[in-house]
Amino acid sequence: MSGRGVPAPRRADLAGDVGAGIVVAMMMIPQGMAYALVAGLPPVAGLYASIVPPLLYALFGTSSTQSVGPMAIISLMTASALAPLAVPGSALYGVLAAQLALVSGAVLLACGLLRVGFLANFFSRPVMSGFTLGSAVVIALGQARTLLGAVPPQVHGPSAMLGVGSIALLLFARRWLAPLLRRLGMPPGAADVAAKLAPMLLVLGGIALVAALRLDRMGVQVIGAVPAGLPRLALATSAVHWQALVKPASLIAFMSFLIAMSGAQALALKRAEKLHTNRELVGLGLANIGSALSGGFPVTGSLSRSAVNFAAGARTRLAGVVTAALLAGALVLQTGWLALLPLPVLAATIIVAVLGLLDWSTLRTSWHYDRADALALLATAGGVLLLGVEAGVVLGLLLSLGTMIWRESRPHIAVLGRIPHTEHFRNVDRYTVDTDRGVLLLRIDAGLFFGNIEAVTRRIEEALAAHGDARELVLVLSAVNAIDSSALFGLLDLNRVLARRHIRLHLAEVKGPVLDRLRASTLLRELSGRLFLSTANAWDALARHDT
Image (cartoon, rainbow, N blue to C red):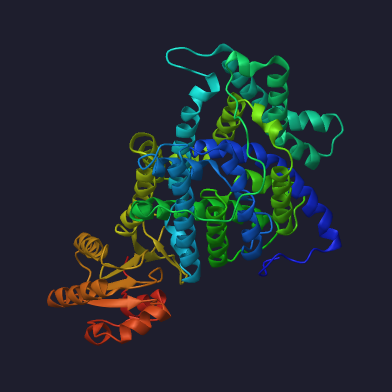
């Protein structure tokens, strides 16, 4: 299923792929139009962005269940990037949205061809959760006026009733509809999928209600005429805005890949499928370029739609092709029925969808497990809320890298002793062990590099001061995977300083790749002590066994 191109359908897979494609297409209609509004574009742009992108992803991607198209957070980032450059809804705004998708797609494609997908690993899960939290709140607050039909300082009664009622129905469907359908005899899988279709049923109900009660004449805003026909494959660009779009496009590309991979990997694990990171970059890159050519805006994989695609029985990427074909057919046929779709209903679908992205469990776990990660999560969310989406992405990335560097710069160093009558050596603070006044065993639990060598040597000096009789210092390097040049010079200096104080420096349990590099240096030749294969060997050779 991970081969290039749309996999040839097997008879056993065909029914599941077609069924899943139909279900996701029904989800995509309200979601695509709603997320286009979040991006500041006409609703039909969301449908345009849902046709060509999944086709191209099906050809070049690797996930069998990934649903590519508009997504709330990427739509918010699009609006944030374009608002300073053009008026939302204007012709220039639409041109710049497609141009933004083009640049984002080019960045993703280049990263895939250069095989640099590993860079996405530098964005930690807590920080990603913080970004999602902040973005969800911004999107929900941004839809409040549309939900209530508000014209300052008043709230439009019919619009507010329609919007708030829609939220209530959607929340009911999310929490209780699937269990209710199961109690009524529907199979569990079908009940879960049916509950996911509540937004589409709500859209149809909203249209019917507007038509029956003429709510549009009472002031309820509707989306208006939706152009029929497929989008033209063309690309209009603004020559003066290329430079202004590079930075936000790069950030959008980065976040698109993170969001898409988080969902695709979770679903791939359930089927023991293997995703190819760099080919995912290529598939998402071409999907965004396809969106640009068809009048859309930046897209990515949607976790909610992908999960429904999986639950509805999708077995191959053919399901995405079916979804795209059905949406294309919907645009070719009459689209007049969409004109009466009330905006408060779309606003409700957006609010409920983004609130479903909130992941409080990550905050709770991080708070109890590692306060630094929890604070990074909260700081990223606050950055999005107070500084804006782009600043929130940059802040999150800096916090991820900063937290990692902070931890690596303060490695754990344990004083070791021997567990009696064994060859096992453990931390003296955790176990009852034998020690020797003349021998100090220190295990360094991190790689040695320019950022931590000073802290390591300072900690070694503190340990030596606390063990004033020690004349043999053994550094146990079983947990050290790398030693860079700065750390090498630090060890050379330490060896010379200790030698002048008549303290011998020994190394034990040096890993093969590290030892290979040390042999190319002068450290092993200058070492005042010895190189030991194991800590037990060092203990037997150096200790006097007086406790």
